[in-house]
Length: 181
Image 1 (cartoon, rainbow, N blue to C red):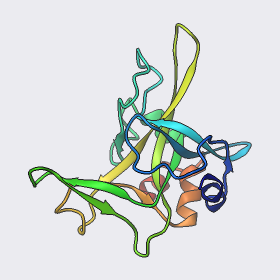
Image 2: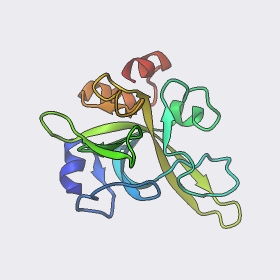
Image 3: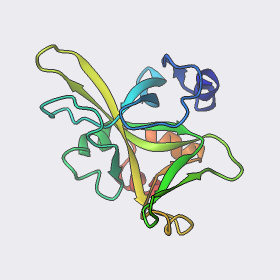
């Protein structure tokens, strides 16, 4: 549940959802962990990164960001430098595009336990109303050998407490961030 998840990752819960969300889909608000000068918080953000400069706030614009290029891409470079986040999960679905119809595979850690994906978040403000909306994308890397036959990419999974802390810390250098991912 939300309280246990927040406690596990040393965050204060500000999410509305208390129960598990089931299978996440782009466009859904999901619990995301962010850190600022006041501490670590778990908030609901929409899955589908909207850059601050976008003309509209259409969700699901970018659901993933490639770890290899996020620091340079105009859509993600500011977030990579200043607005990193964690997305709690206990698994993910990967679709095998080599089969017809596509075959879904449920991917978990062994033994199964909660972990976090490395992510980037952004805030888009509607110029007409002044209303803001926060959204996120999951960082991806080349698939591990065990998954390469199913898909060529996979989320960046963080399980080590030190890596989790370094990912969230605003002053972490680009070299260390690249090392983590």
